[in-house]
Length: 450
Image (cartoon, rainbow, N blue to C red; front, side, top):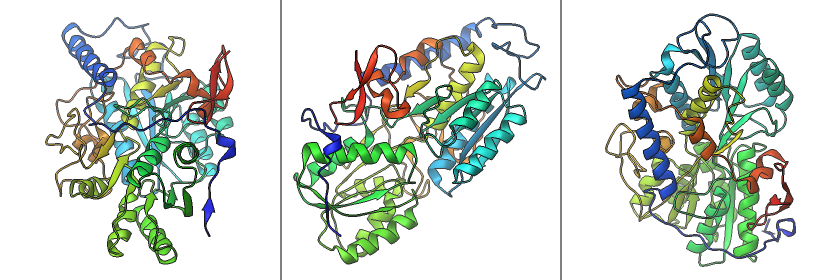
Protein backbone atom coordinates (compact mmCIF):
# COMPACT_ATOMS: atom_id res chain seq x y z
CA UNK A 1 0.00 0.00 0.00
CA UNK A 2 1.36 3.39 -0.93
CA UNK A 3 2.00 5.72 1.98
CA UNK A 4 2.85 9.41 1.77
CA UNK A 5 4.75 10.57 4.83
CA UNK A 6 3.97 14.17 5.79
CA UNK A 7 5.30 14.06 9.31
CA UNK A 8 3.50 16.93 10.98
CA UNK A 9 4.85 15.96 14.37
CA UNK A 10 8.38 16.38 13.06
CA UNK A 11 8.07 19.98 11.93
CA UNK A 12 11.31 21.26 10.46
CA UNK A 13 12.76 24.63 11.31
CA UNK A 14 15.39 25.12 8.63
CA UNK A 15 16.65 23.37 5.52
CA UNK A 16 20.09 21.82 5.44
CA UNK A 17 22.09 19.69 3.07
CA UNK A 18 24.31 16.68 3.59
CA UNK A 19 27.99 17.19 3.02
CA UNK A 20 29.62 13.87 2.20
CA UNK A 21 33.36 13.74 2.62
CA UNK A 22 36.21 11.30 2.84
CA UNK A 23 36.20 9.44 6.14
CA UNK A 24 39.75 10.30 7.12
CA UNK A 25 38.28 11.97 10.18
CA UNK A 26 37.36 15.45 11.33
CA UNK A 27 39.95 17.47 13.13
CA UNK A 28 38.13 16.95 16.45
CA UNK A 29 38.03 13.15 16.27
CA UNK A 30 41.47 12.88 14.71
CA UNK A 31 42.85 15.06 17.49
CA UNK A 32 41.03 12.94 20.07
CA UNK A 33 42.61 9.78 18.70
CA UNK A 34 46.06 11.36 18.56
CA UNK A 35 45.77 12.72 22.10
CA UNK A 36 44.57 9.36 23.39
CA UNK A 37 47.48 7.54 21.73
CA UNK A 38 49.91 10.13 23.05
CA UNK A 39 48.51 9.71 26.55
CA UNK A 40 49.03 5.96 26.26
CA UNK A 41 52.67 6.39 25.27
CA UNK A 42 53.22 8.77 28.14
CA UNK A 43 51.59 6.34 30.57
CA UNK A 44 53.80 3.53 29.29
CA UNK A 45 56.93 5.60 29.87
CA UNK A 46 55.96 7.18 33.17
CA UNK A 47 53.86 4.40 34.70
CA UNK A 48 50.26 4.65 35.87
CA UNK A 49 48.97 7.38 38.14
CA UNK A 50 49.09 6.83 41.87
CA UNK A 51 46.22 4.56 42.97
CA UNK A 52 43.13 6.27 44.35
CA UNK A 53 43.28 4.04 47.45
CA UNK A 54 44.75 0.78 48.68
CA UNK A 55 41.96 -1.73 48.28
CA UNK A 56 44.01 -4.90 48.44
CA UNK A 57 44.01 -5.33 44.67
CA UNK A 58 46.71 -4.63 42.06
CA UNK A 59 44.95 -1.46 40.87
CA UNK A 60 43.85 0.41 43.94
CA UNK A 61 40.83 1.76 42.10
CA UNK A 62 38.19 4.00 43.68
CA UNK A 63 36.36 1.25 45.59
CA UNK A 64 37.17 -2.39 46.35
CA UNK A 65 35.57 -5.18 44.31
CA UNK A 66 32.00 -5.88 45.42
CA UNK A 67 32.60 -9.59 45.86
CA UNK A 68 35.96 -9.21 47.57
CA UNK A 69 39.08 -10.73 46.13
CA UNK A 70 41.72 -8.94 44.10
CA UNK A 71 39.91 -8.46 40.78
CA UNK A 72 36.83 -6.62 39.58
CA UNK A 73 34.11 -8.80 38.05
CA UNK A 74 33.11 -7.25 34.72
CA UNK A 75 30.45 -8.68 32.40
CA UNK A 76 30.46 -8.06 28.64
CA UNK A 77 27.18 -8.95 26.95
CA UNK A 78 25.84 -8.80 23.38
CA UNK A 79 22.52 -9.46 21.70
CA UNK A 80 22.22 -13.12 20.71
CA UNK A 81 20.76 -12.87 17.19
CA UNK A 82 23.54 -14.47 15.13
CA UNK A 83 24.64 -11.02 14.07
CA UNK A 84 28.27 -10.41 13.07
CA UNK A 85 28.10 -6.83 14.35
CA UNK A 86 27.11 -8.03 17.82
CA UNK A 87 29.95 -10.55 17.84
CA UNK A 88 32.50 -7.92 16.87
CA UNK A 89 31.22 -5.51 19.51
CA UNK A 90 31.36 -8.05 22.34
CA UNK A 91 34.75 -9.32 21.16
CA UNK A 92 36.25 -5.82 21.13
CA UNK A 93 34.93 -5.17 24.63
CA UNK A 94 36.27 -8.51 25.85
CA UNK A 95 39.68 -7.92 24.28
CA UNK A 96 39.90 -4.51 25.98
CA UNK A 97 39.49 -6.07 29.42
CA UNK A 98 42.16 -8.68 28.59
CA UNK A 99 44.80 -6.10 27.64
CA UNK A 100 47.37 -4.58 29.96
CA UNK A 101 46.91 -2.63 32.19
CA UNK A 102 43.37 -3.88 32.73
CA UNK A 103 44.17 -7.59 32.67
CA UNK A 104 45.70 -7.45 36.15
CA UNK A 105 42.58 -5.80 37.54
CA UNK A 106 39.63 -7.48 35.83
CA UNK A 107 37.95 -10.86 35.84
CA UNK A 108 36.09 -10.85 32.53
CA UNK A 109 32.84 -12.77 32.07
CA UNK A 110 30.98 -12.82 28.75
CA UNK A 111 27.27 -13.40 28.19
CA UNK A 112 24.71 -13.35 25.39
CA UNK A 113 21.38 -11.55 25.79
CA UNK A 114 18.36 -13.28 24.26
CA UNK A 115 16.28 -10.89 22.12
CA UNK A 116 13.48 -10.18 24.56
CA UNK A 117 13.39 -7.78 27.54
CA UNK A 118 12.27 -10.42 30.06
CA UNK A 119 15.36 -12.51 29.36
CA UNK A 120 17.61 -9.47 29.68
CA UNK A 121 16.02 -8.51 32.99
CA UNK A 122 16.70 -11.99 34.37
CA UNK A 123 20.26 -11.92 33.09
CA UNK A 124 21.05 -8.51 34.64
CA UNK A 125 19.64 -9.67 37.96
CA UNK A 126 21.82 -12.79 37.84
CA UNK A 127 24.94 -10.76 37.02
CA UNK A 128 24.24 -8.41 39.92
CA UNK A 129 23.72 -11.31 42.32
CA UNK A 130 26.97 -12.91 41.09
CA UNK A 131 28.99 -9.92 42.30
CA UNK A 132 29.33 -7.86 39.15
CA UNK A 133 31.28 -4.63 39.54
CA UNK A 134 30.38 -3.52 36.03
CA UNK A 135 27.97 -4.69 33.32
CA UNK A 136 28.53 -3.62 29.72
CA UNK A 137 25.55 -4.54 27.57
CA UNK A 138 23.33 -3.80 24.58
CA UNK A 139 19.86 -2.77 25.79
CA UNK A 140 16.81 -4.25 24.09
CA UNK A 141 14.54 -1.39 25.11
CA UNK A 142 15.08 2.23 26.13
CA UNK A 143 12.70 1.82 29.08
CA UNK A 144 11.62 -1.79 29.74
CA UNK A 145 14.78 -2.81 31.63
CA UNK A 146 15.15 0.47 33.55
CA UNK A 147 14.01 -0.83 36.93
CA UNK A 148 16.48 -3.71 36.75
CA UNK A 149 19.34 -1.40 35.74
CA UNK A 150 18.42 0.84 38.69
CA UNK A 151 18.52 -2.16 41.04
CA UNK A 152 22.01 -2.98 39.75
CA UNK A 153 23.19 0.60 40.23
CA UNK A 154 21.77 0.67 43.76
CA UNK A 155 23.76 -2.49 44.52
CA UNK A 156 26.97 -0.73 43.46
CA UNK A 157 27.21 -2.01 39.88
CA UNK A 158 28.45 0.29 37.10
CA UNK A 159 26.02 -0.17 34.19
CA UNK A 160 27.20 0.87 30.71
CA UNK A 161 24.95 0.56 27.66
CA UNK A 162 26.51 0.56 24.19
CA UNK A 163 24.92 1.43 20.83
CA UNK A 164 21.31 1.29 22.04
CA UNK A 165 20.47 3.64 24.90
CA UNK A 166 18.26 3.67 28.00
CA UNK A 167 16.51 6.45 29.88
CA UNK A 168 17.50 5.24 33.37
CA UNK A 169 19.69 8.10 34.73
CA UNK A 170 22.17 5.91 36.62
CA UNK A 171 23.25 4.02 33.49
CA UNK A 172 26.00 5.28 31.18
CA UNK A 173 25.01 5.50 27.50
CA UNK A 174 27.82 5.06 24.96
CA UNK A 175 26.25 5.49 21.54
CA UNK A 176 26.51 6.95 18.07
CA UNK A 177 22.78 7.40 17.40
CA UNK A 178 22.72 11.15 18.14
CA UNK A 179 26.30 11.89 17.07
CA UNK A 180 27.53 13.75 14.00
CA UNK A 181 29.31 11.66 11.36
CA UNK A 182 33.00 12.30 10.91
CA UNK A 183 33.28 15.22 8.53
CA UNK A 184 29.65 16.41 8.89
CA UNK A 185 27.94 19.02 11.04
CA UNK A 186 24.55 17.29 10.92
CA UNK A 187 23.67 14.85 13.74
CA UNK A 188 21.73 11.56 13.51
CA UNK A 189 22.60 8.57 11.36
CA UNK A 190 19.02 8.23 10.12
CA UNK A 191 18.82 11.85 9.01
CA UNK A 192 22.19 11.70 7.25
CA UNK A 193 21.39 8.40 5.52
CA UNK A 194 17.98 9.56 4.28
CA UNK A 195 19.43 12.88 3.12
CA UNK A 196 22.05 10.96 1.14
CA UNK A 197 19.36 8.76 -0.45
CA UNK A 198 17.29 11.80 -1.39
CA UNK A 199 20.34 13.40 -2.98
CA UNK A 200 21.15 10.26 -5.00
CA UNK A 201 17.53 10.08 -6.17
CA UNK A 202 17.51 13.67 -7.33
CA UNK A 203 15.18 14.84 -4.58
CA UNK A 204 12.11 12.72 -5.34
CA UNK A 205 10.86 9.18 -5.87
CA UNK A 206 9.31 6.15 -4.20
CA UNK A 207 11.32 4.15 -1.67
CA UNK A 208 11.33 1.14 0.63
CA UNK A 209 12.26 1.46 4.31
CA UNK A 210 13.81 -1.49 6.16
CA UNK A 211 13.88 -1.36 9.93
CA UNK A 212 16.20 -3.13 12.35
CA UNK A 213 14.99 -4.67 15.62
CA UNK A 214 11.75 -2.87 16.42
CA UNK A 215 11.52 -1.15 19.80
CA UNK A 216 15.22 -0.55 20.33
CA UNK A 217 16.35 3.04 20.78
CA UNK A 218 18.63 2.59 17.76
CA UNK A 219 15.77 1.75 15.41
CA UNK A 220 13.47 4.37 16.94
CA UNK A 221 15.92 7.24 16.51
CA UNK A 222 17.04 6.17 13.02
CA UNK A 223 13.47 5.97 11.82
CA UNK A 224 12.23 9.24 13.30
CA UNK A 225 15.26 11.17 12.10
CA UNK A 226 14.91 9.64 8.62
CA UNK A 227 11.27 10.75 8.50
CA UNK A 228 12.39 14.22 9.57
CA UNK A 229 14.80 14.32 6.63
CA UNK A 230 11.96 13.39 4.26
CA UNK A 231 9.73 16.12 5.65
CA UNK A 232 12.48 18.70 5.39
CA UNK A 233 14.18 17.76 2.14
CA UNK A 234 11.63 15.81 0.05
CA UNK A 235 8.11 16.16 1.49
CA UNK A 236 6.51 14.53 -1.56
CA UNK A 237 8.59 11.36 -1.30
CA UNK A 238 6.54 8.18 -0.88
CA UNK A 239 7.37 5.18 1.28
CA UNK A 240 5.85 2.32 -0.68
CA UNK A 241 6.34 -0.29 2.03
CA UNK A 242 8.46 -0.99 5.10
CA UNK A 243 9.37 -4.02 7.16
CA UNK A 244 11.30 -5.28 10.18
CA UNK A 245 14.62 -6.60 8.90
CA UNK A 246 15.86 -7.50 12.43
CA UNK A 247 19.42 -6.52 11.42
CA UNK A 248 19.61 -9.83 9.59
CA UNK A 249 20.79 -10.05 5.98
CA UNK A 250 18.68 -13.13 5.14
CA UNK A 251 15.55 -11.43 6.46
CA UNK A 252 16.38 -8.24 4.56
CA UNK A 253 16.87 -10.19 1.32
CA UNK A 254 13.59 -12.05 1.78
CA UNK A 255 11.60 -8.89 2.51
CA UNK A 256 13.23 -6.89 -0.28
CA UNK A 257 12.43 -9.65 -2.78
CA UNK A 258 8.78 -9.62 -1.70
CA UNK A 259 8.59 -5.83 -1.88
CA UNK A 260 10.13 -5.74 -5.37
CA UNK A 261 7.53 -8.18 -6.64
CA UNK A 262 4.74 -5.82 -5.57
CA UNK A 263 6.51 -2.54 -6.30
CA UNK A 264 8.95 -3.02 -9.20
CA UNK A 265 9.18 0.73 -9.91
CA UNK A 266 10.83 1.61 -6.57
CA UNK A 267 13.80 3.94 -7.05
CA UNK A 268 15.60 3.75 -3.70
CA UNK A 269 15.95 1.71 -0.49
CA UNK A 270 16.65 2.96 3.03
CA UNK A 271 18.04 -0.27 4.46
CA UNK A 272 19.19 -0.94 8.02
CA UNK A 273 21.89 -3.38 9.09
CA UNK A 274 21.74 -6.50 6.97
CA UNK A 275 21.84 -4.21 3.94
CA UNK A 276 23.80 -6.83 2.03
CA UNK A 277 20.46 -8.68 1.76
CA UNK A 278 18.81 -5.62 0.21
CA UNK A 279 21.54 -5.38 -2.42
CA UNK A 280 21.53 -9.12 -3.14
CA UNK A 281 17.77 -9.02 -3.75
CA UNK A 282 18.22 -6.10 -6.14
CA UNK A 283 21.00 -7.89 -8.00
CA UNK A 284 18.84 -11.00 -8.32
CA UNK A 285 16.11 -8.80 -9.84
CA UNK A 286 18.67 -7.18 -12.16
CA UNK A 287 17.77 -3.80 -10.72
CA UNK A 288 20.41 -1.19 -9.79
CA UNK A 289 19.05 1.64 -7.63
CA UNK A 290 20.52 3.72 -4.79
CA UNK A 291 20.71 2.03 -1.39
CA UNK A 292 21.68 3.49 1.94
CA UNK A 293 22.90 0.74 4.23
CA UNK A 294 25.08 0.32 7.24
CA UNK A 295 28.63 -0.94 7.48
CA UNK A 296 28.89 -4.50 6.15
CA UNK A 297 31.93 -5.71 4.24
CA UNK A 298 29.72 -6.89 1.36
CA UNK A 299 28.01 -3.54 0.94
CA UNK A 300 31.28 -1.62 0.91
CA UNK A 301 32.72 -4.06 -1.61
CA UNK A 302 29.71 -3.28 -3.80
CA UNK A 303 30.34 0.45 -3.39
CA UNK A 304 33.94 -0.15 -4.39
CA UNK A 305 32.62 -1.85 -7.53
CA UNK A 306 30.44 1.18 -8.31
CA UNK A 307 27.05 0.42 -6.75
CA UNK A 308 25.14 3.69 -6.07
CA UNK A 309 24.86 3.99 -2.33
CA UNK A 310 26.07 5.34 0.97
CA UNK A 311 27.32 3.22 3.88
CA UNK A 312 26.64 4.88 7.19
CA UNK A 313 26.02 3.15 10.45
CA UNK A 314 26.92 1.86 13.83
CA UNK A 315 30.58 1.13 14.66
CA UNK A 316 31.02 -2.11 16.65
CA UNK A 317 34.01 -0.32 18.17
CA UNK A 318 31.39 0.93 20.65
CA UNK A 319 31.75 -2.37 22.52
CA UNK A 320 35.41 -1.64 23.24
CA UNK A 321 34.78 2.04 23.94
CA UNK A 322 31.99 1.18 26.39
CA UNK A 323 34.30 -1.24 28.19
CA UNK A 324 36.88 1.55 28.56
CA UNK A 325 34.21 3.84 29.99
CA UNK A 326 33.11 1.15 32.47
CA UNK A 327 36.68 0.55 33.62
CA UNK A 328 37.25 4.30 33.82
CA UNK A 329 34.29 4.64 36.18
CA UNK A 330 35.64 1.81 38.34
CA UNK A 331 39.09 3.39 38.38
CA UNK A 332 38.16 7.00 39.09
CA UNK A 333 34.83 6.53 40.82
CA UNK A 334 31.27 7.61 40.00
CA UNK A 335 31.89 11.10 41.41
CA UNK A 336 34.83 11.94 39.12
CA UNK A 337 32.61 13.78 36.64
CA UNK A 338 32.54 11.12 33.91
CA UNK A 339 29.51 11.90 31.70
CA UNK A 340 26.60 9.48 31.63
CA UNK A 341 25.98 10.29 27.95
CA UNK A 342 28.85 9.79 25.50
CA UNK A 343 28.69 10.19 21.73
CA UNK A 344 30.84 8.00 19.47
CA UNK A 345 31.91 9.35 16.05
CA UNK A 346 31.01 7.27 12.98
CA UNK A 347 31.78 7.20 9.26
CA UNK A 348 30.05 8.04 6.02
CA UNK A 349 31.43 5.94 3.14
CA UNK A 350 30.65 6.31 -0.57
CA UNK A 351 32.10 4.71 -3.68
CA UNK A 352 34.49 7.68 -3.84
CA UNK A 353 35.77 7.32 -0.28
CA UNK A 354 36.23 3.55 0.13
CA UNK A 355 39.69 2.87 1.55
CA UNK A 356 41.03 -0.65 2.06
CA UNK A 357 42.38 -1.62 5.49
CA UNK A 358 45.77 -3.19 4.90
CA UNK A 359 46.71 -3.75 8.55
CA UNK A 360 45.39 -5.90 11.38
CA UNK A 361 45.40 -2.98 13.81
CA UNK A 362 43.82 0.46 13.81
CA UNK A 363 44.44 2.51 10.68
CA UNK A 364 43.01 6.02 10.46
CA UNK A 365 40.48 6.34 7.63
CA UNK A 366 40.31 2.76 6.33
CA UNK A 367 36.80 1.40 5.97
CA UNK A 368 36.77 -1.95 4.13
CA UNK A 369 38.92 -5.08 4.27
CA UNK A 370 40.46 -6.81 1.25
CA UNK A 371 38.05 -9.30 -0.32
CA UNK A 372 38.08 -12.66 1.45
CA UNK A 373 39.62 -11.41 4.71
CA UNK A 374 36.30 -11.28 6.61
CA UNK A 375 32.74 -12.44 6.03
CA UNK A 376 30.06 -10.49 4.19
CA UNK A 377 28.47 -9.19 7.39
CA UNK A 378 31.63 -8.17 9.22
CA UNK A 379 32.68 -4.55 9.23
CA UNK A 380 35.87 -2.49 9.22
CA UNK A 381 34.20 -0.09 11.63
CA UNK A 382 35.90 -1.99 14.40
CA UNK A 383 38.37 0.87 13.88
CA UNK A 384 37.41 4.19 15.49
CA UNK A 385 39.37 7.22 16.74
CA UNK A 386 38.24 6.45 20.31
CA UNK A 387 39.57 2.88 20.11
CA UNK A 388 43.08 3.10 18.66
CA UNK A 389 43.97 -0.24 20.29
CA UNK A 390 41.41 -2.14 18.20
CA UNK A 391 42.51 -4.96 15.90
CA UNK A 392 40.95 -7.43 13.51
CA UNK A 393 42.26 -10.27 15.67
CA UNK A 394 40.44 -8.82 18.69
CA UNK A 395 37.21 -8.39 16.72
CA UNK A 396 37.32 -11.98 15.45
CA UNK A 397 38.35 -13.76 18.65
CA UNK A 398 37.77 -11.55 21.68
CA UNK A 399 41.46 -11.96 22.54
CA UNK A 400 43.99 -9.23 21.72
CA UNK A 401 47.13 -10.09 19.79
CA UNK A 402 50.29 -10.41 21.89
CA UNK A 403 51.82 -7.08 22.80
CA UNK A 404 48.77 -4.94 22.11
CA UNK A 405 47.99 -2.71 25.09
CA UNK A 406 44.90 -0.75 26.07
CA UNK A 407 44.73 3.03 25.80
CA UNK A 408 42.82 4.09 28.94
CA UNK A 409 40.78 7.29 28.88
CA UNK A 410 41.55 10.10 31.25
CA UNK A 411 38.64 11.77 33.01
CA UNK A 412 39.21 14.85 30.85
CA UNK A 413 38.96 12.78 27.66
CA UNK A 414 35.73 11.15 28.78
CA UNK A 415 34.27 14.56 29.56
CA UNK A 416 35.22 15.77 26.09
CA UNK A 417 33.15 12.96 24.50
CA UNK A 418 29.94 14.02 26.27
CA UNK A 419 26.76 14.11 24.22
CA UNK A 420 25.65 17.58 23.15
CA UNK A 421 22.99 18.67 25.69
CA UNK A 422 20.62 19.70 22.89
CA UNK A 423 20.28 16.03 21.92
CA UNK A 424 19.86 14.68 25.46
CA UNK A 425 16.08 14.40 25.20
CA UNK A 426 16.46 11.96 22.30
CA UNK A 427 18.08 9.37 24.56
CA UNK A 428 16.92 10.32 28.07
CA UNK A 429 13.45 11.81 27.48
CA UNK A 430 14.61 14.62 29.77
CA UNK A 431 16.80 17.68 29.45
CA UNK A 432 19.80 18.66 31.59
CA UNK A 433 19.62 21.50 34.07
CA UNK A 434 19.31 24.85 32.32
CA UNK A 435 17.67 23.29 29.24
CA UNK A 436 14.02 22.73 28.35
CA UNK A 437 12.28 20.54 25.80
CA UNK A 438 12.06 22.07 22.33
CA UNK A 439 12.56 21.38 18.62
CA UNK A 440 15.96 20.70 17.08
CA UNK A 441 16.89 22.02 13.67
CA UNK A 442 16.35 18.53 12.26
CA UNK A 443 12.73 18.57 13.47
CA UNK A 444 13.07 16.12 16.36
CA UNK A 445 12.21 16.81 19.98
CA UNK A 446 15.36 17.91 21.79
CA UNK A 447 16.54 20.43 24.33
CA UNK A 448 16.98 24.20 24.06
CA UNK A 449 18.69 26.45 26.56
CA UNK A 450 16.26 27.98 29.00
